[in-house]
Length: 499
Ligand SMILES: Nc1ncnc2c1ncn2[C@@H]1O[C@H](COP(=O)(O)OP(=O)(O)OP(=O)(O)O)[C@@H](O)[C@H]1O
Image (tube, rainbow, N blue to C red):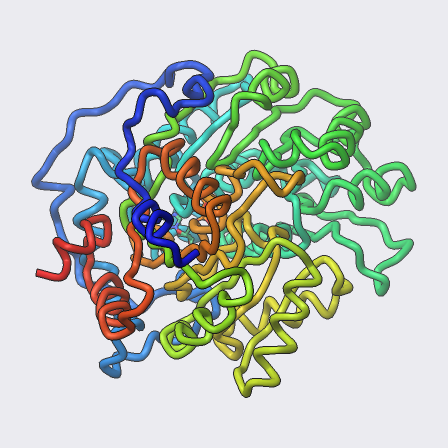
């Protein structure tokens, strides 16, 4: 894509071309939640940082304060977080404390152990509604990395009756990795609840024909469906059903069917809870059918992007030229942790082989890998042992590794037809960085008119800027990316930051 015309066009223009809007805005219902007035004196308070709990660091190890510009210190994150949580326009803002949310002492202890000081907006809004008795269904949307997992986990943990050994809460997630991660959060948060048992319901040959008798189960829909049918999961006492990444779970032919089946196998009375960062219009009706009469918390498209994620693109000299561009980024990528997203499993494997041949250290995870091998790869990435992860959309959603500072879209995310852009997947992919107030860079490689148009459509859908990098000026590129990461306000334009 080196023609004059296309390189001018590669400047993904700022949004707001009203002609461009292809779909009506997502509006399920206005939130039925009242906003509390802000007490600035309380919210501006910056408390001295404590050592982050294991979950906060998410296995990424201590962030080295060694002058590496891509490795932020936790101190800076904490200070920035205090600012963000005091800003009513920020998704991390809240006017209340966890103490005011009617949680048990055991749960408050768990939350403090995880180093959560204040709830985020979604936690503050969703929890009171989730905890109402008799229980009400909920459909809730909030930006990536804003703490949805804790919101639904605290509800579950508040509702479980430890004296009853039967499964009482079931969480369904689209990938094995996400199910394991959610289980980790629930177990960590519930660590002070004596006698609490939690279990994963994901394919595991070592536990074949074994009853899943824990209070809380987290799994993938196919396995859960299978285990209920084979009577390894007793569905009679389930009182909460959560679908994380609910739009994905209800949309995809296979997953949607499996989730519906699981729901139909639950015989008692239960609360249905659907969470996601995205609820595209075409799944809203189904979501409302799946969770009837739900309380709804929703956001418009334009509110979905995260300020801390700096979105960039680079114009590559054709499809074949993308690899060389990627290689030029490798040094920057491997200083912290990065994820490279590709469209096809075969591309993931080819890229891994080529990068390894060229002497780079990378890990790769796609649906072609089997269960335990997948666990090893994701665990190595979480621990920081592997710094660069090549993956497909299988890990686009939900995965929370706080040390990820760069996401690279090697391929622009598209629908199954390969032609139409996929804004939801784009948002979830880039949301693997910039978690809970952190900053990150999301770089998309474009290489021809079509890929430029796809990215342009995505940028317009969210009314967001994707700034082009100067493809031939690597000093400026390095400088720009380093500044973005160093700058606690990554939402500013590249030009602003360069000054
Ligand atoms: N109140 C809080 N205070 C501090 N950190 C928090 C708080 N709530 C959640 N976190 C942390 O924020 C990170 C992101 O949370 P989580 O994974 O639940 O986001 P999410 O909204 O589910 O994102 P996604 O849409 O990508 O799935 C996690 O590392 C979590 O530990």
